[in-house]
Image (cartoon, rainbow over all chains, first blue to last red; front, top):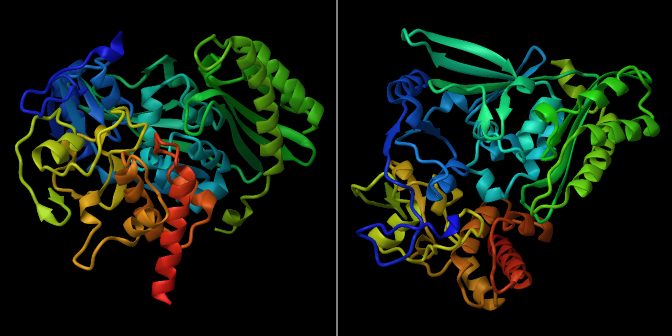
Amino acid sequence: MVWRETRWLAPSVGSDMQVPAQFEYQRATSVEHAIALLNRHGPESRVVAGGHSLIPMMKLRLAQPEMLIDINDLTELAELHFQEGVLRLGALLRHADILASPEVGLLCPMLHDAERVIADPVVRNRGTVGGSVCQADPSEDLSGAFCALRAIAVIRGCSNGGEAYTRTVPMREFFTGPYQTVVADAELLVELQVPIFPDAGSAYVKVDRRSGDWAVAAAAAVVRLDGDTVTDVGIGLTAVGARNFVAQEAEEYLRGRTPAPEHFAEAGRIAAAHCSPADDQRGPADYKRHLAGELTRRALERAAARVGRGVTWRSR
Amino acid sequence: MTVNGQEHTREVEPRLLLVHLLRDELGLTGTHWGCDTSNCGACTVWMDRIPVKSCTVLAAMADGRDVHTVEGLETSFGLDQLQVSFMACHGLQCGFCTPGMLMTARWLLDQNPDPTDTQIREAISGQTCRCTGYENIVRSVRHAAEAEAGKAS
């Protein structure tokens, strides 16, 4: 059993502690430096920021990098900007930074809903936005949120010839499987760009077994309204096996309809029918499917009720 | 790195965790080593004035940083008000979670000198009291907040 796999650290007082296998450690001094280190050390190197997924995995030997590149000094990756209708979140922003930003709460309340239910306040002081999405845990809250928001990931890297480049990937194409993303070996996620619309409202609703736990299921919704018509909608689903974390069929159903409760309920039913949750210790598949439908409905209702709340930013 | 205002220099293996550096190398055993999975919060210390779980921070990551542990709460003027309040309100039974609770609660009161019970519960929601003595912990933090407000006025 994996939990029993412990090691003795030689000079320590005789305690049966879990420590990672040996690795080398280096602090990056710039984004270019981090990418150069990744390039030099190849696939056995890993970037560490908050470390709240990677370090526990290293203790359990689920990850065993030979080189750890610490990017915590790269303050240029911890910036938050709102320009020309786009909220730009640096990958190194801590969850606590996002929650502490009234601007984010105003522009994109869904992100505050989601951040508030990620782990606990002390973990949120350390864990980062970029780390969360790059970990690509199927139960991770921000994946569904950013996919619903149609956010764009900005990735920097370095070609074999040593040429630096920047590329962008829609979050809906970012995840290639559980714990897998499009970010390649010598690449670094540097920013997430969230399009913000004055006629939109957003919300995130989650069910977990206890405070701070991973989601049993969760739903994210963005609703754009023009009078009594849903002009656009984004629906993200967490932990229920939805393709690309998105309920695409439900989005298609809702677009062009009125924001009526029966339409939101029907969108929920469609979302539930098209996801494929699995039985696990967090609950049976049929319960998760029920949650997917009900949480989609609630997220849509809440998002629609919030349309127009972020008006103050329009004056800028 | 600096721990409780005192500078320390050590050569460590990259894989050494901050909690073990503090306990085994520096002898600061006030910081407790609990679940080792960043769930229980017994190992909470401040790094650059922000509470972190030291079982999930490499000692090397604390290089050049300013670390504070529970040992640093007491000053030449005596125990911190929170320590006094935890004693007065029976905020601890076995005491295992107490150092982490104190560090998080001190940070909370520094940010928000008059928190509601809900805010206190939210602040300590990443920390497990295995005696389930949460009522008295919340009461202790309230007591400290009120005592500090009384002193200030």
